Image (cartoon, rainbow, N blue to C red; front, side):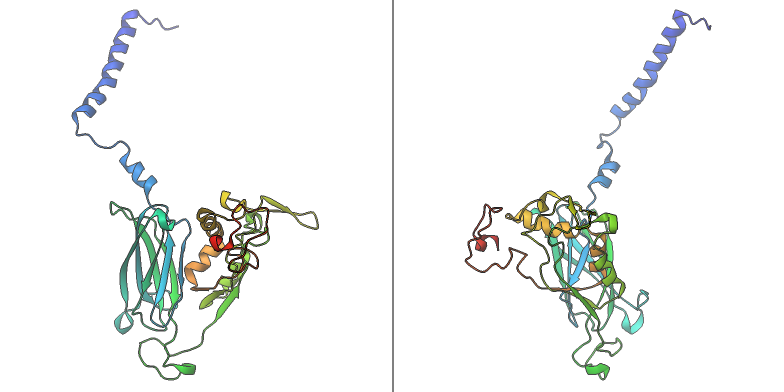
Length: 304
């Protein structure tokens, strides 16, 4: 066994204390700066939890949409590209960066930009992000969309303007009734695979024929099917009951965007959306007083 003297222990203790004190003294002498500033910047970087989307695309305009994780200003960059995604040069070149509105809690941190004066029948690469109040850029999500052919190209013959190929051929997909009747996002089967199937057809636009949410249909953690199989839903607080507050209605839309298939398609395929009844309540009409024990708010005008 090694013989360690008391003097050795004391010397070691003094040395350890000196080594500990030296960095502390140096730190005290240095200019003050926020601790772990780099980590904080990463942690507070704005993200886009609901993805991005485009909608109501015409021959010369499009609405660009996204939702941030906190307050910030929306930014969007558009570049004209060919069908392979390569940026166009020469006469077909087009690039524009747009500064949109500031997203706040009042809008559930959503924002949109109306991009106008775009060339017709042109595919665009899209980048959307938000910058915080200090000007720090957040997460960027990429997407794409194509403007519609202009009115001067019936059947692809003749044009009134624009440099893109003359063609009026368009393809679209349509669907409705998202996350209805208690059937929500089941990650065990790959989520909402119908959106993936539509996305794979590479349509020019998507028509959502209503019931974009089921505000009157709670989603539980599991549903037992007739054959005994168990359907397991992703759930959030807002979908656990019927929607009666603004937060709960917004939460229904946020829930749908948790699905990766839906986010991927909306980033690449413009949406034309209409509403139906389940955005509020089944078969509702103005002035109706709902006879439904699940509701504390029975006035449908308030809910709508």
